[in-house]
Each structure stands twice: as C-alpha cells, then as structure tokens.
Amino acid sequence: MDGELMPIGRFARLCRLSVKQLRHYGDVGLLRPAWVDLDSGYRYYRSGQAREALSIGLLRSLDVPLPVIGQVLAGRGHRRRARWCA
Image (cartoon, rainbow, N blue to C red; front, top):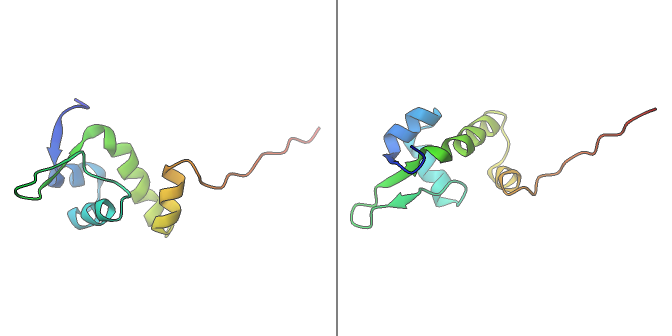
C-alpha cells in the first residue's frame, strides 16, 4: 500500500491536517507531495508519508516553528546528551 498514491484530501484526513496546511508545507519544502499532476497541479501523497505529516502536525500543535521542524525531520535537531550518575 505504501506505493499507492492518494489524493491530497484523503491524505489530509488520514493525517488530521487541512489541505491548506499540506499545500503550505509542500510549498515551503517541509512535506513535498509524492507526485504533482502537471496539468492540474493536483497533489498526491503516499501512505508512507503519513508518519512525517503526523509529526509535523504534532510539533505545530506545540507551536514549534516550521524551520525548526525542518531541522528535526532532517535529523539536525538539537539533542541533549543524557548523563548517567553513578
């Protein structure tokens, strides 16, 4: 099923995001559609993109700025190292 394309509306419902949010995230390069129809501009996503979309939605609900979310998704987020006390 990961290879199956789904329209933006269906993907939006799956990820609990609005179509407007998905378009914006695509436009800023945060979550690009898997395929865009060149004639209509209609966007399609794969089910495998849902985890990333859900993560974006969660982080936005915590008011994390989009540039920081981009860094986190790219693996460049700041991480604290745990210290173990003996």
